Length: 255
Image 1 (tube, helix red, strand yellow):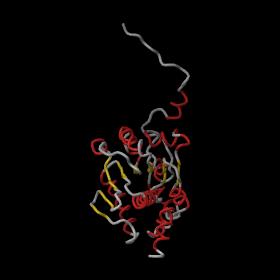
Image 2 (cartoon, helix red, strand yellow):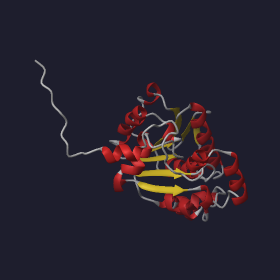
Image 3 (spheres, helix red, strand yellow):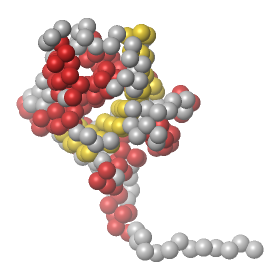
Image 4 (cartoon, one colour):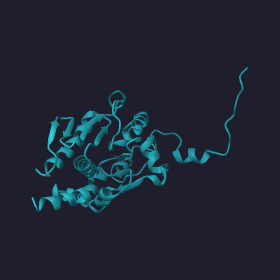
């Protein structure tokens, strides 16, 4: 017990310590994100770069060391939410016995003895409006989540002043994920990790993959680039260049 207490204190103060105890050695960008104090983080990262693993570590740390926390896992579909939730469970179970015990556990929800809850949800307005006071909100595959859903979940953080993490690959120059990345301002902690910067993805495999798939797909999924839709007639940059925000809208008075 004498050694367990200092270890628990170190993990409470530093999520990287928790990650290491769970058997996960974080990359430099992952360690930086785990230690970042930012309330808003947006991860534009390649497939298989480790963004879900890092999000799972954040969720586990929040639930274990901040009693009474509500952690919500949101994805376009329930299946996707469950996949991230399983990574959270794996991280939690790898910590051993010196953490709050589960009082309720299912395929969608974990409630700990310290009052913290981790709940996985699909991106449907009917399922998310009943929650409030989230300490941590993870939005997985965020570029595929509807803007209306994003608008519905933001108020969950108003009173709690909780943390939100958006994680995804790009999906065109549209939607809230692109807007927050491009126009969200300094309030966002941005992380971009293309596949070429991930040591776990072999360079020869990546080169072969680029020969097999369309270039626009590789640009999004592996290079983390926001590109226009292939069916888009007018490029987004041309539309933006044509806008003049100094022109006032025309007001028409009806009889």
